[in-house]
Image: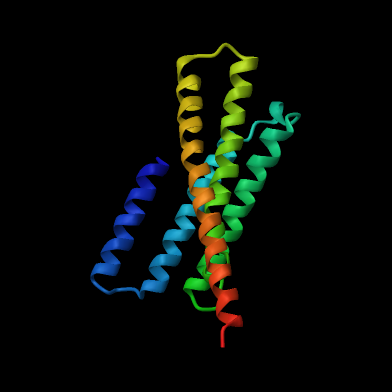
Amino acid sequence: MWSYVLFISIVTLFCTSFYKVLPLEYILSGMMVLFCLTFLKMFLENLEKKYYYDKKYLWNFLLGMFLLIIYSIGSVLDFLGYIKFIGYFGFLWAIAPTFYLYGLRRLMHLKILSEKSDEKILKRYKLFNDSLKTFYVLDILMLLLYIMVIWKNAYNIFSF
């Protein structure tokens, strides 16, 4: 159901941008809100009380969702021109999904340990594990890019 709503919303936003019905700022803001709502729906579906005792699951999952919401709100405010957010914190976008996926992978690990592991849970665990490897590489690349930008700006300050 949600995937259909998301698909129809994205097609609607694309069509309005193609025919110039809405300004681009509103279209980008709408897409960020849909992105945030999709992750919030996944968050609420995968938040299970019986695994709250595991700190690796709970804290990483909550921190990932919190960062996604903060970055989505900041990006919407940046698209609408209220604040400058993406220029300063855009490099940190890769960190939020990493925490989020690590929490999901830990949830699948806890389900495998506590329940009879069926094939669906094992497939999801392997998918999250492979996705996390990609996000780890993206985190390192974003960190290197951030260091290069800081280094370049620091070098430009001291050059006369």
